[in-house]
Image 1: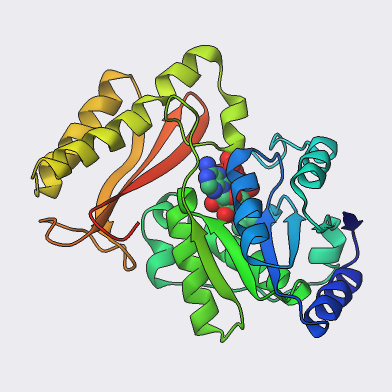
Image 2: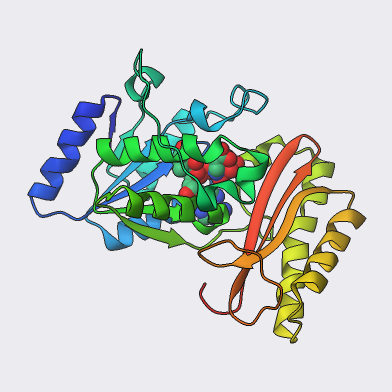
Length: 282
Ligand SMILES: Nc1ncnc2c1ncn2[C@@H]1O[C@H](COP(=O)(O)OP(=O)(O)OP(=O)(O)O)[C@@H](O)[C@H]1O
Ligand SMILES: CC(C)(CO)[C@@H](O)C(=O)[O-]
Ligand code: BAL
């Protein structure tokens, strides 16, 4: 496995691999890798000849009040996990490589980027789209792998790819969970033991919605009320509990076709997100 800090070098390595006939897969991450990230690497390894992972904690997607400074950074462990998995290339740029002195061009998105997470984190998806486009330009792979855990992020990237004619195929992989159901997330590392227990109300609420849906409940209002109930009884404050159409993220009243239920909630000072598809389409 080769670790590269230079944008020009990583681009040259990926172009050379593609010119030699290899299919290249890309997994963008912010590091602090867990089994969720590694499942994306596995998916890429299963479908591609060469797999490249980027590790970059992107400052432009964090609001000044958010956790950029304390975001977990575990580079040595990340590299050994990737090496063990069979990853080929790792891009670990310095900030100046991605945002050189004087940079002034960014991607701005409306539409789905302004819903749900976009209401709570108004600048977030512009930062994500900007860095992801940069990573796609520096790492011109055939396919990029993202997780369903960040459902809206995957849709935002899909929209950006279409709008800006980016030659990249998107693969969205299932959410990997801890044995007790909590979605794996780098931010789980912030949770105290008690908060870790409290956080379980998030997957429990989603699971309850899934069960009620499978038993025939089709009212979004009822499902949402019950999800709030599960969260509130665990003492969690939700940023939002929503049931929306897949793809467009527009609110659903009656679940006549497949939809997605999403939760964002604060567990102490840690903000977690999770979702589940209701119906077909997962
Ligand atoms: N539990 C998971 N299952 C599948 N994919 C995941 C999971 N967690 C993260 N990913 C995916 O890994 C990629 C990198 O995500 P990121 O580095 O932000 O990790 P994260 O654990 O989501 O961190 P954070 O705590 O910041 O949300 C994204 O495409 C994300 O959707
Ligand atoms: C896609 C991403 C790597 C962009 O910084 C980040 O938002 C993430 O890890 O999900
Ligand atoms: N996984 C999304 C990255 C973020 O919350 O900033």
